[in-house]
Length: 282
Picture 1 (cartoon, rainbow, N blue to C red):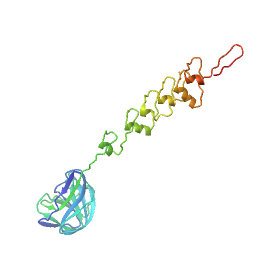
Picture 2 (picture 1 turned 90 degrees about the vertical axis):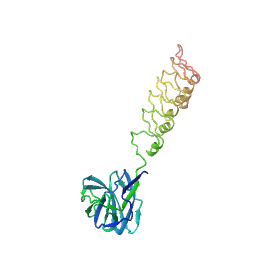
Picture 3 (picture 1 turned 60 degrees about the vertical axis):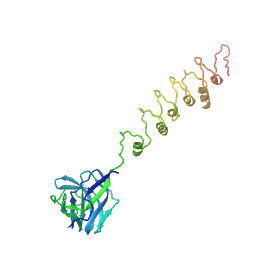
Picture 4 (picture 1 turned 30 degrees about the vertical axis):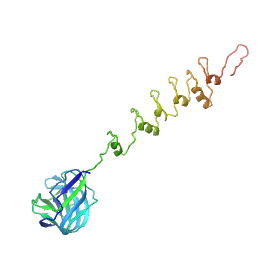
């Protein structure tokens, strides 16, 4: 994570300043990036009570809106106090602020100053604070980092680490797309029937288990083994006849058809005769 910081270093300074049932927003060192503040540091001369910290967006002039906040509670005095494990949203240009019902901060009588408003203003929306009080630097500091992974939308393309970050490492193919390797595996999980205009082989052919060959199609290999119906004008041989026998069907060959190989074994020949209607069987 890239570093973000906000506010002034939590150090032992030359003077002290009281806070009591007030909300302060410190102008020193606005946030340098978008992300999250994950820890804050205080240096107080008097313990803080009911403490809350927040990031503030400057709406305009002296008007501010809370972006995010964390409840801290009690803050001990006399040394730097660090509170970690926070998750407080921040954007570039935001300021850090604090509320406490009682306490005192270490401060210097120099620097960018602060604004204040009576009562607990965490959270607030477009609240009007005092005008800037110049020449004040309070010991309140926050740091964190920017997000390390960019979310992918459905229109984005990615490979390698990008694909893993998107949370969906297996691509889904639509009809217009072609794929192999992992893409082909995905097609097995979601079988798609081939139309007569489609050409398929290898892994693409695997999920199509109920294909029917029409008279205009030709089949070989896997397609021949799964064929269930041949049109009357087909010429069949070899594996086609075997497939038909597996289904327990006998193919009738008519005068216009040619039979070879196994076709001869299953053909039933009907021949009209002039004298007695004799039927010959193979």
